[in-house]
Image (cartoon, rainbow over all chains, first blue to last red; front, side, top):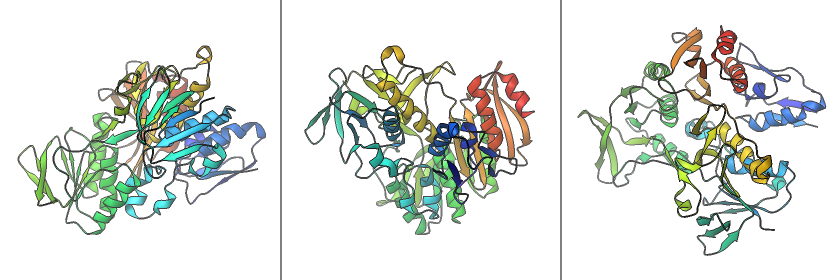
Length: 63
Length: 398
């Protein structure tokens, strides 16, 4: 699983960080950082949930 | 077996379908919506679409491109006349009926309008069509736009109009903007933010009526005897849940559809989104939440509830969350403070226009609001999801 964020769309709402803090972190500079671009399979549910609830639909999962 | 029928192809309705499919249900699912087209995603309608920085076609709901995968029988332009909740039968406006094995009510809400005849230049904002109609009027170069109501819609529209270079008067009957969701101290910050950007903000004054010039609006008469000249007027005075079709259905209705803590309104009938009032066990109070992410969460919870046996049903606890973009500020809030809760600024300051404020009621934290502080708000939300205790929030943000 590969996590791809479209940073042109991302508005740093940080919803993803609330769902999968292992993978997504919005830092003090208000930018989103992807901590693991290829997270372990057991995080798939959380990452999918984060993608679903992103207000800008900026997160994609490539298998 | 009869299909599950979802009334409303909104974010909440489609999210329910997503959860129903995600739970492995492979029976028929029918989605009905009175609109001729799939409802658009709403957040950009008062911002990017209105400003012209996003193509209208791009404002589609998150699940719109997964309809095929969700395998739904989508029937647009299909209005439900009534429901018999005992028989689980829906009567449609086209004269046909539909038997259901379960019903998801996700009909959303309709904007309130001002009494009186409809006038050209007067707008509400709920649908893509509304947004495009308002945009067309804004592009005609009005001398001034009057925005009635400083809630989410009003505040965001005022900001977008200023960014388009238009003169704006923002009129609010309450003493501060966004009072339905924010304690007054923070509402005052929002008022100042708009004043800083050149908005003529009028607080604590009601609207007497619209002033017309023939068919066209020409201004707004205020209760204090003054008036505002404006050839475009945006009315953002809240919404009414769409429940009229449930009259006599057997589904309890009050402030929207009355649900239990599992989002169940009657046997075989669940509700979600703007239309649903449920008992939120996390806060110990009934609430109806008109927020984007809530529609996704509650839609999913309602979908799962519909499939569950009564003995397996689980409550839907929620710490609601919203964001609102106004100018270059991003307001985000987790929780559900009351107007009277104490507001404690725990990080930053109003002067910096970058801060975190937590709301306190006794030993409880009822919400955390951040302005350009997304990380703090999401972390606070995670804590609030565990418990509403004040101390851990103070510790987190100190």
